[in-house]
Length: 439
Image (cartoon, rainbow, N blue to C red):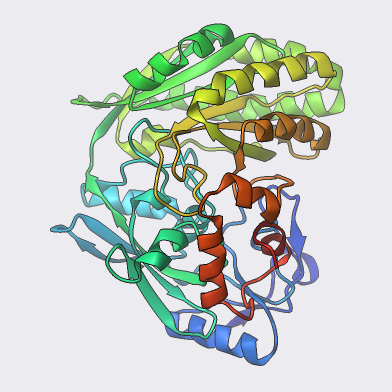
């Protein structure tokens, strides 16, 4: 059951390459019983426990010097309930496999993020989201959860069963237990028409509320050092299917968005002075296009260029002000930023520590190419976003702590009380959770 770590001499690394850990041991359980036994054994050995997915978090939320649980054997669909319109899936299942399996069954999630490499439990536990006027994060689509708690027992929760656990554990940060299965709401598969087109930065901000109200899913990318954005609107469609032609899709999504973009970032990292000129070209390289396909083929796209990211959730009403401040900061700072800034939205939800908990939300994400210094840019951006009562994404770079979170999350105390009850000995503690939740 035990295995060695990836990388040299037992070191675990995340996808972004900015976090590493050396666990005392790694366990790959093949069943919920084996996982529960591993948790009990860790308690006997006085070791802390963390489950890790695909390492797509840029924070050290999954890092541990204790027992690292790898969920890759806990995969697959347990069952589909067509009367309730739900699917129950093992926690280690990659979103890609879930999306493809659902499509074969004529089903789909309502909304999803823009990549699908992560495990279902890793994605939901950190609050992964896409963009939506009425439909919220992946975690908001959860109808039931099964988790192994600190004493090795298996707890199930839903709106009716253990509702106070359900309110918090959908985005549980790995602090309440190890999720072993998730029940999602699904619906009959549908078609989305995507419309991508360039739009001036000032116009997007002036018309933001309108663009948000008129589209089921609106998002845009602003290219720093330019006044240009690329907008994307996804709306349900009666069809017919009109996917991006294969060659065009390869050219735009692989060659331009991954291949050329990778080279541009290498050049920018070597010679930062070239970045503004590259940004002007990048912002004009992607021309307008429209296509119609099933949801996961429209919502998600490959992201092969490695980066480090910080993302903040601000009240939706504050998004234009925050972005104008961000642009002014970049323009006067002398910073050279080669990655676009991504802007998305979510409706208010009822999950205790969701970044959209209790408020209509806009997300502003800043990125830096892997291997370039990001601290100065992120620090300056964070100063702007926290001034708007921003809530950082739990899986992305930030410097906030429990004291800050207790101010921006009205239900913060609810979460920490539940944690005291479910994990009194802090079996699932690590440095990150100590910082964001308090000791």
